[in-house]
Amino acid sequence: MISLYLHGDKVDSVFQLLGEDENDISFSVAWALAQCPSYLSAFLKSQIKSKWTLKDIDIRLQHSERKSGITDIEIESAGSFYLIIEAKKGWQLPSQKQLHKYTNRPKFKESSAPFKLIVVLSECSQEYATANMEVREIDGIRIESVSWKDMAKLAITARSTSSHSEKHVIDELLIYLRGLMTMQNLDSNRVYVVSLKSKKEEGWGISWIDIVEKRRRYFHPIGGGRGGWPKQPPNYIAFRYHGKLQSIHHIEGYEVFTNPHETFPEIPERKWPSYFLYKLGPAFSPSKEVRTGKIYPNGRVWCMLDTLFTEKTISDARALSKKREE
Image 1 (cartoon, rainbow, N blue to C red):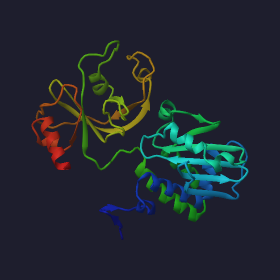
Image 2 (image 1 turned 45 degrees about the horizontal axis):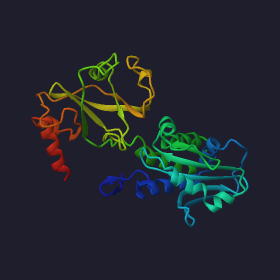
Image 3 (image 1 turned 60 degrees about the horizontal axis):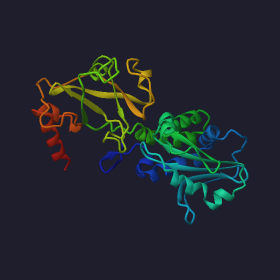
């Protein structure tokens, strides 16, 4: 068996040779769309409701127009449709200012295509995008959000009707996309350690400790300026209260929600910002007691998993973890 490695990491897909930044992702997806008519057709069907044909379609990458920015991907069929695709890595969404530049692009604005659309590709779920997209329409142009998970599903659907050569490209792309989706670093042993209140929040009929211990769930705001919370789900999360580490959990899955009442009836119903809701794996912890140490009562810290088993306190584990990372 022959294996290929790049910078020490095994390469399982040709797309991994490009990299994992936003341009690399958009190049990979555009190549697959151009090489696999079945995949392109599945994508277009998901976005365009009017009639169209797979004929004379141009796919452009990094197309620049003066004072109008550079687009990631453009898909155009003259006189039929014109799509601009903005690719984002992780839970990021483009600003209204950036999208407005695209709707004002001379070529896009002057096109006679009866159907025009801007598509944002990102990790964001539909629920998160709906709650956090600054605008859903600019200058009469609709803005749609499509997740990388959606693109993978479309590829799987298209594979069943693809030729042998198309199947090969789709398989390579799926390996690549699966490495990007969820944005959890499955090789990471970093643990996000948070503090839990023993008292119930005002108006709640359930405590944070019960949410973790009895429901095997936990939730927090999605990061990006709000209290330093993570922008991406961690691989492991640990909880401390009563002055010491209580449990560590692998995060088995997550979703985004804006109404905890639907999952926890004991919490009053109201509209919240977007939160990550984690499904926690079985609890585990060191056999010895690990005290909190010098950490603010509500402080949240990152530690390497093994340090929580070797150090006397969480603060010592944090210090050792930081030293290693330096």
